[in-house]
Length: 77
Image 1 (spheres, helix red, strand yellow):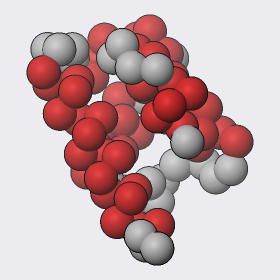
Image 2: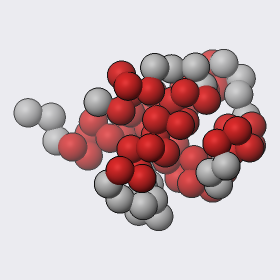
Image 3: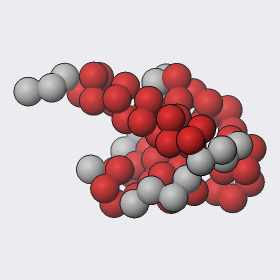
Image 4: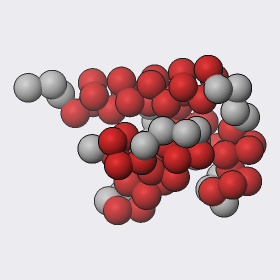
């Protein structure tokens, strides 16, 4: 079984790389989702300590994924 921390870091790296590949600015994602850019910066670093827990965290990740053109359902699994 893969430790949750490892899979979380892999997801953070995947999201950042995909955003960079598509040349989408964090400010743009923030404006579209109404979620602070600093929270997305923390996500990309793998630091979700400032993020809300539970369903809110899942919703934020889904919003980020959708903003960069990924399937939010697939990413949130």
